[in-house]
Image (tube, rainbow, N blue to C red; front, side, top):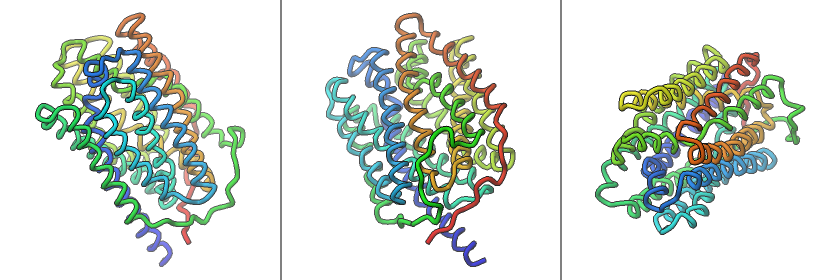
Length: 395
């Protein structure tokens, strides 16, 4: 009983520290992200193919960095160093954005920014380690809600401050919360040694059958899931005012913040598969609305549904992957999944940009709709095994 109480206390402490750090980092990120695509395409004069390349490259770097840090985190049973350095990278990159006069140096700083995601797989593994099957979805939902709450705060600050201080000062300001978040992890998070089986390398052949199906579902969805930048520029092209694009970003981020916890907790009760299935339906509904109509009401409704999609997909996907992974390889598998999704996100945004430029503005949406539909059908083949992973113990 005492061990259970100690584990519960540690679970709450770790989730609390990560929640505040996530809030601060996303606050900094989303001070600038609402104006990111306009910053590149109109301020730095990049075209849509360049925007797709930079965003896609960033997603690919995310994937590689998470796989690398996940592997090393499991092998050496160290989590903390990857987490606080990741937050530090984010702060440095935003200063670099502020100093850029063309899009060329932005490529390097975007790589550094997204390399900061080395924090994600070790952090997610640590959360999964201290969680049980009955709290795993809830805990990932809490983190995602705090991520999005920080984003909402950042967006509001963007809307208020951008007209006053402009790009450069806003980007420098965005570095401060991430610096605070890195300090919080460094001083408040205690490194723990996880009592699991000895680490061993893995291959796709050794995966549980359900994990293999989820692997291919994630590949297909990633290949069609282009960057949110395309949604914002799409709205801008259909005469949605430039100064109001941060409001659209605010809409889907606020909804994701409000609902991530609920969807995560619901997946603890109803099953990860069912909520994941619904999350892809939300994304397809958002695309269909924009394809059918492009007026103000349709655009806003599409971003509302996009918020529902983000709230349902992100915490539940992480919980599902961690739940189906062997505990001794949890960070490696989570990082491997993120690597795979990022690698395919790179051609996704690049292909979307090329389709946009070479065919028409609607082509990327049809492409995404088709691949997401196939991924949704594949989810039905997953058979969730309840109670696969219990909470691990710490020394």
